[in-house]
Image (cartoon, rainbow, N blue to C red):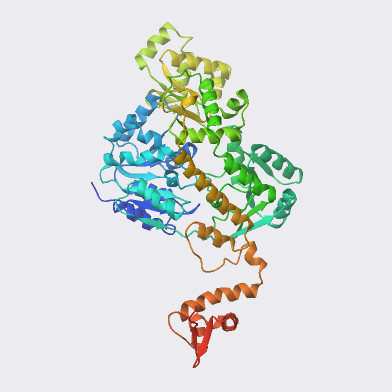
Length: 635
């Protein structure tokens, strides 16, 4: 195997950057050296480059495991724009489409293969994996492997099963949100040969955290919009409230749109594009908005409801100020929000009777008889399901997640999958069909003229365009394509925006469904801890940045000086406190005279240093002996 290409050349050639961001190069060099590595980079820190650059620099194929299909597809799109050949393996693809994709991986035609963890662990994929020239296994959103984490996904636990098939191939695990216990768990669950954690500080000096106890949130929001310029995001918890708030703001002259998973893909794309380009000033959104968006000049992020945990809040708030310029992360809450947060946490772990009720309804909805359905995959319309069985989506989702944790099913995220097709017959056969059934294959001929690659690969097709070219309706086009599919002439995969459910075992009688008290108890305990941490963040009167840093395992000696708590204190007090820390550091090494201390810390700061020294002497932190300043024995 030839030595890796220079990583700076790769960075410049494909991404156009002259330099890496902090810690990226260290992470990349660790991976190229063959070391299993956990990279902890906050939102906007450039995690994807940490596996994309070594993936390009080394010979072979980089496997990237990701839980979010929409994010996979976006990264594949971005890489292809840069001329990098890659693909994605996920729920909803036909077996034939997967075969074509995996053959490309075996033949060295692709540099990257993105796939969901359950695909990685499946026997179908493993048969191909043995023949693939893999150079790196990257695990994105790696906190999902830990039951200590806020987004535990049991299918992640199976990633380690493929390590014996990958010999000496290194693993790079990346995440933006991991506490110290989660970090340790990630390395253990992925079977790191040696612990290697490279972590960028979670400090965001340009991001000003603000928490306001507010009854009239909309008026407060409008006041914020008047005072703070630039584009931003308003996060709320329900689809209904995104629409209501967007209408309220639009009526007052603000360019605002609602964004949530219930909107059609084209509409979501249109809103996201308008916001990214600055045509829209703000988006009122659920947490469906933001993942994978790279807009550096977001000046403010406002949460109108308290998020479930600090991890989610830090990630969403961190979408502000990625250009390193001043930005605001604002949380508005009232007492009702605290109560609602506690209720949501409790409802995340429904009773076994309700879980069984959902399981039974799901089997009926999917039309599966007891004893059947193992390894079958289905599109799943949550809202239609809830309407059919008179259930609430907010109660059904926790039940489905518990069923997933226990291994009864897997639930993939909703994403837009455009229509795709591939012609299965040879040109000679098509010629005979034209002679025998000219009218029947007319649309097929038009399809081949419109998409020349259809004979050799799966291609995205547009039924509307086909309808215009063939002078028939879109419904007629779809009906004919389905007919071709049925006759074995093409493999046609219609567009879908729906999530998918895979049943992992045959359908049981609902009374046979059990939940492990040990597992659910552990998950509940962690959820309550995170909920309490979020409550503390909202209610406590200490430096906001310090609280978040402490949660993620960083101990900051200094207050940030920028959050609402710090700014409510007098400026001299803040200034003095900063110098107290610096003075302690100097005098812990050796006693100094005041003039020598000022010289070390900088004469331009004489006033601030003297102010801090006076406070320290008055409060018994320092004592003066023979002209030298000493820390007292208790300090």
